Length: 68
Image (cartoon, rainbow, N blue to C red):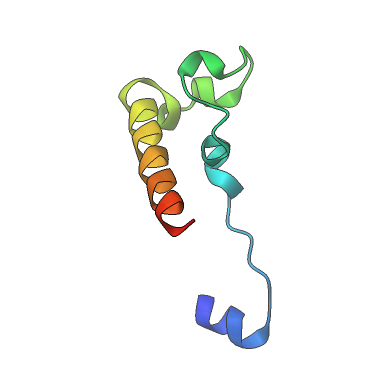
């Protein structure tokens, strides 16, 4: 899909820009989520999955820093 988008000069916005907020760096621990935040109730952001998301974010930040 991306080659076609580039060829046509069309913009692309992926679902959940900025990784549901994780890539902003504002969320470092589960408690950073508001009491009514949907991520508190989503298995993708609970328990060990939350920590995996943080680890992935850290790796992405490392790559970004290397690229300046």
